[in-house]
Image (tube, rainbow, N blue to C red; front, top):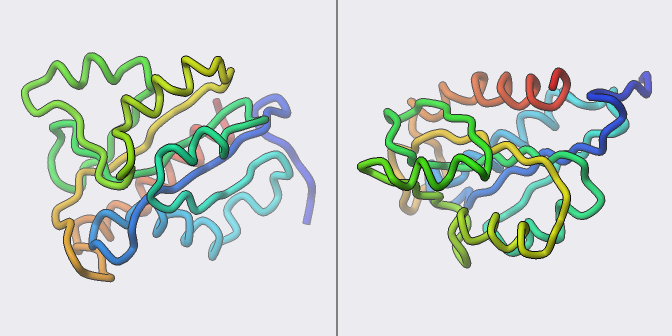
Length: 166
């Protein structure tokens, strides 16, 4: 195993959120499982892959000492079911103004905008990207919908691009 670094030696945290017992809500955690299973970032000593569970407030602690964080979650920003969306915390206000607004399914204690506002208030200097997919079904199930399962390679591709190239 080589110990290469990406993106100018930045400390990068890839964090997936979700509840794997609530159908498509578990997408963030499922993507983390696939990244680990396929050892996608195994050669990168500066990239940490984290199962974030369902607590948005915990994100504040997870991103400490990171230069960059990539958040993976089930997100409805008005896109089609199964469609991947990539945005930054700065884009949230614009997305919320759209007809359908923004809904994160996994961060149960605070909504996504509130978590990012807290991070900003605490002056945590981390660059963040959110990679999400609109879920089809959020309810009691330990399986992803076929449309969401098919989105996993695209989600992983987006995460790799953000972590390694930018």
